[in-house]
Image 1: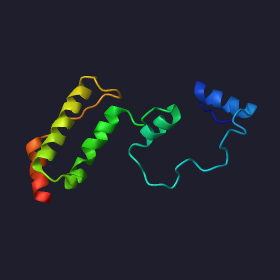
Image 2 (image 1 turned 180 degrees about the vertical axis):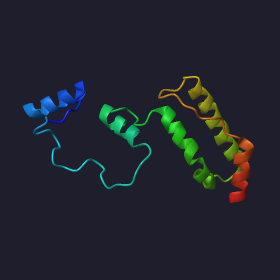
Image 3 (image 1 turned 90 degrees about the vertical axis):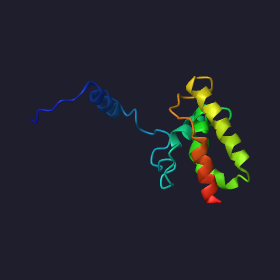
Image 4 (image 1 turned 60 degrees about the vertical axis):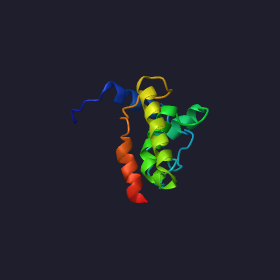
Amino acid sequence: MANWYESHVDRQIREAQERGEFDNLPGAGRPLPDHGELYDDDWWVKDLARRERLPGGIPPTLRLRREVEDLPEALAKFKTEDSVRRTVADLNIRIERAKRGLIEGPPTILRPLAPEEIVAAWRRAR
C-alpha cells in the first residue's frame, strides 16, 4: 500500500465527494462562462459588479484607471490643446483624490500625469 499524505482540506473534499455533495450542482456539464471569448483584464471587476449588483457598475477608482489607460487613444478626439490640458488637469485632480481615499473603490497606485508630455504626444499625432 502506498504511503501518501492527505491534507485536512483534501480529506474534506474527498469525503464530500463520497457523500455526493458535488453531484447535480448548478451548471454541471455546461461550459464555463465566457469560455472561448477574448481575454479582458477587467473580467474580475465586471464579474464582481454583476454578482454584487453594484449600481453604476465599475467602482470609480477603477473607472479612473481605465480613463488613464485609454487616454492615448482618446487624444485623437481632442480639437484644441486647451481641451487636452483641461482633461489632464481633471484626471490629475481625481488621481490625487483617489490616492487620498476620497473616491470610492479599491486603492490606486496611479501616478499624476505629465501634462507637457501628453500635449506633446497630442501635437505629434495631429
